[in-house]
Image (cartoon, rainbow, N blue to C red; front, side):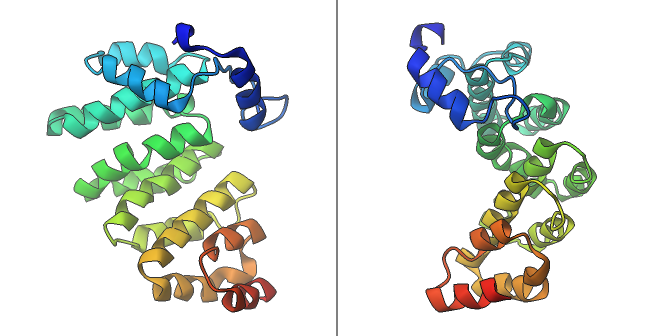
Length: 225
């Protein structure tokens, strides 16, 4: 990873991921390694143990954490039921280290979401975690529903969206709006049913994300509400 580092790119990524004081990514350290190079690196180390992954995921370096998640996702996809449960538990134990939006977005649907889709009794985990005061844990919950949405199961995404309607952070507004838009891509009538009930109290960013694929006239109607 160190050999792939690029100091100029690291500076750009530090700005892009808001690592300054009092910003959401405060303290995150970047090497400047591209995501394709991180994926290539992950493929070389797919046999890394969970202890090894833990070491990477505990690193202050962003690319270490993301690469560890790429390895974890591959292990999950190829694993048996026992290993998938171990990875599910491991992921939940490490939410404090999955602490920027790309880390969440690239991993939560493919690990938590898919595991819970196959083990519906674990949905209680999402409803417990969504009450967290931690920004990233709430985004993990919302993005986990992407696995359900892709399977045309929308109820939990709607319920969790409703819980997060009053959240103050724009990264939650964007996540909720994005998942609502994904529902609309599959069933616009169901998305609109939710929007008609809640659009007047939705944060504007959330609403804009949710209606992004609507035609111009329909967008204006919702924004005026």
